[in-house]
Image 1 (cartoon, protein in one colour):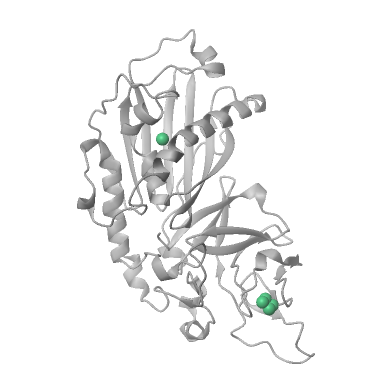
Image 2 (image 1 turned 90 degrees about the horizontal axis):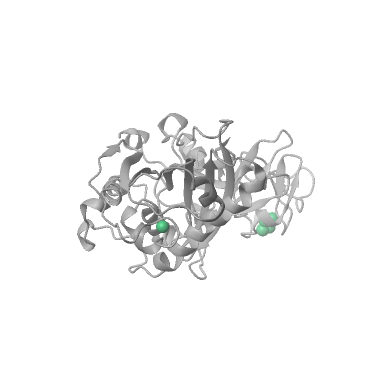
Length: 380
Ligand code: FES
Ligand SMILES: [Fe+2]
């Protein structure tokens, strides 16, 4: 799992004035909105006795821990300890990590890392959002699989005729012609020529009177840390899926999808569109959950790659560079979902870098990141 990225952690309409727990990178976070509507993202781990702030209450712009009522402001500092008599100060250590947030494309993005603003990798661009020609549905589904396995699955064209032979793949024409990848530091995208089966059901009715090309171009690619775009050109319009593979822990993934279409854009067709996406995910799920080893190997030579796997190979190469840079989160950094623990670490937030003196004083230690020279991280 990689820190120092903007993670789309929740759909914006799911976050309000009640605290909401989200899990990512094996860590729990609490999300809530201030009175002005800005989204706050704090480590969910109260520094007093480890209570879950997400079970507490939002008071004004603060969140109060459900256990002893300590109140934390959006910057993460504790501003009230009810057990203290009046006049007693609040220890400087009484603070939790606060992560920058941005609301974009209907998603809440949290920056899970400690890089200063100018050094942060970009949030991928989603041009269909806000385009009146497009309409989107939201879909989500949990996989008992590692997020890099689920991510690679979505950029893997060669599985389509086999796993999706009854939905959109064509089992009789499984070849993948060689494709060219457009690569930058944060993404890899390719146009891939695929043979596809004619759509059925409601969409089949739309396709009935149109000529169907032998092959269609599918634009497919990954955007770090965990998004995959797949643009499918149907005879009657475009279907563009943005698939966020959220690492709950090393072996559990919450897949959230923004599914855009520029045909049948009425809300009445949403249920049908959502069911199609869910059916595809349900075809992938048992296959991906059965992959071994569960975690994506670090060494390229541990699995056999073909030309048609070029997008996955590009992912593994880029990931190796970022691991080299110290952005990997795994093993002892994982707090959630790996059995009982006696210590808790957190993902370092930008405040730790801004104030190294304070960084040493934090109750919950961060592995890696804190105090590291910024220049190491800005080089690409
Ligand atoms: S555990 Fe949060 S206030 Fe005590
Ligand atoms: Fe699939």
